[in-house]
Length: 558
Image (tube, rainbow, N blue to C red):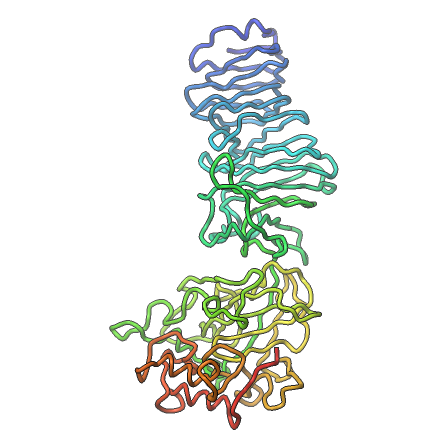
């Protein structure tokens, strides 16, 4: 049916029988008026070059996919009742109500704008707006009444978001994206520890909004490692500077509500949001970053050439006698959660870090960037010294401590930029802490080299028999080895709970050697536990080397 500029369609015309696949075309300057209670059913495509007037309704009820091009013009009421869906091929406005009875409407590059008093009815996990392109669902004059944006990023992914604006009334636009990206709306898709959807939320006039968001997702959206008991809503700040990046703090992390099954999906709510942009639900990948690269050597691995050996990475474990094709005996999940105790208690965003085997980069010859082992880092309040966060990270042969990708600075994610102490611990070495505060930032990495000066580590003045670090070579310092029971001392005397020598014997049992193995009792870190042999082979003799002329090293320098 074509409505030209010389014709007016009134209520009676709404009762005319439509042919199957009938299209509705309204010419520019024409008047189509639909009276109250009347419905114009369209079974084909809808094209309008003028506002469709009157309080009646346009119903999209075709047997196949329908194209809808309102060319930016408005209709009072629109209903979608088409299981084959509809596609916006031009912008549209709805001033009173959009009713979902069946199907989805795909936006492509086009926006659908709802008037200030407009509502949406009937939306569900099978009937919603699909923002599968640049098009967005816009709500005019959104104020202090919650409004649900029933959006999804595909015909199988529904991720609605409810928004309340307690600030200056503004037009708010929302789109759902298929992934969470490293740079908010751009970058690389994050593949773990997030719900696999994000929201692009914008305001017509920048500033003045005060938003409350409730985001929704389902179990199928959760990527590996996602923890719905410990996540939250994060906003990506795109403005270059010290605040750029994802902004979620550990203090904002909580447990999700809901069941993950329609009509009660999992949800998080966040209040007091004053900036728009990309929003995501997750944990570590979308926590506010805090970057540092410490450097330290392990006594057990130091080889005298400003490098450490990486025998745990290259130890032969296969029956054929060949090097393991991935990572020797070093585990791909951090070992410190299993050790536990007061010395290795996870906090903040720490605990359960994992890596892909390729990070270990087995090669014919080792390089300075190859991985030696996992280490355990703690972030301390710069005033009280209280531990506020921890995380496991990777130690390279050159002493640099890096993220689980083997390259990036360590990220104490979820902590605000401020001054902190940083401590480093290892499962069979004694730990250290920075001598003073480090000013850590969100976008700038802070490097700190413990290994070039004894004064870089805090030395407790009450400890007179040993400094915080051991001298490995002239001007080179590192962590004391020999701590087979992962406590705060190295000793060969005492009972089984105190003596590192006794712990090694317990590990050995009736055997003379145990290995290849990844064990704290392997204090010389060659992949084998033994007490016999030369100084380079015997873990017992390695402890004696650490002790020097003393009987015990007690670490109270942290």
